[in-house]
Image (cartoon, rainbow, N blue to C red; front, side):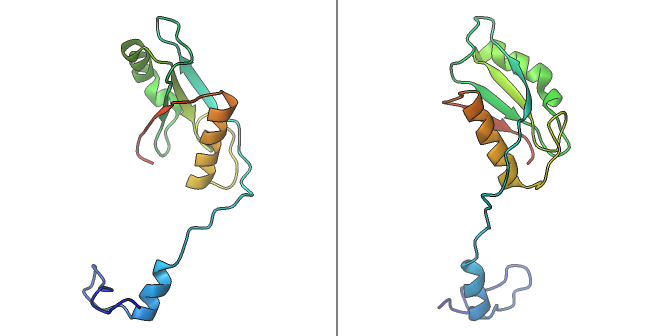
Length: 130
């Protein structure tokens, strides 16, 4: 059982009843296997040496963003790092399909599907905001 001292609320300095605090700690996020992954639209920049497969960098935009937000940056990364760079339009953003649900687990499922479909491994992932 959680002691009342350990279950203090940081916001109002009141004690949370142990029964409630214990129940909250046991909650988990529901993850649905019913999420149907979608095909994400993307841009790909190949480094000048033509290396199209070694250690790709994948860039994810933030809320209300698109793959186009990183056009110049992806070209610079490809040139300076000598790595292929992919910029993705996430679910319900840019030119990618709009589909339900719009959730972080659904977007993560889409990105993992993208890796598999494009045979990407040893990926470096760069994200902004979300």
